[in-house]
Length: 252
Image (cartoon, rainbow, N blue to C red; front, side, top):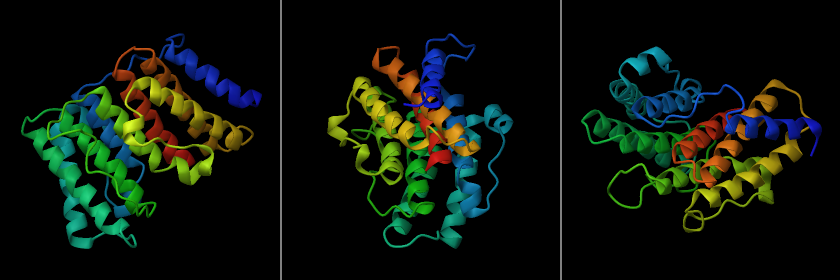
């Protein structure tokens, strides 16, 4: 491990231990809406030419803004379709429409779990539409028809997110476990160790802005995953997911 790569990990672990003045992660309606906004900014404008509203608009009316924005994306897709080949096109459309449906359920008071479902579907849609991924992803991260935001649902969302970019970026060096193999935060933490190691080997000596930014986000995701693995709460799983979304935007 290079000195530069080691510093990424050290800084992230320090941040995870609150040695730096980083705010404690939050998992609530506003945080879920902001996560959707940030994830959409990594690809929706480039893919469809649609403007993603700013953070102030999402903060003022989180659920309503998510539903309105995803409604616009769904309408665009219905009219113009998506530019993806093979199975990527129908699966991309399915996940975008599913994200809109979840946002409408959330807007009608069915619970924040539907916002997590919308975020999950946007992550899957990005893989299909932007990257041409033709594999099948489940339509949501939940184990049944209910939508509780639990450790299991958050871990499955993260596992799917890793599946969308880690194998294509690092090859067979990192194996993403099957759903039934990664059920606890400690299991996820172990996987993130492997992802971080592969990233350090590939990007540790690279000094372009995207690589540095992506490594920093990945290191933060590793730190949050470590805290979740040691029982600090599901909020750190959500924080890890947000960091991994940003890492993928820079590294994938």
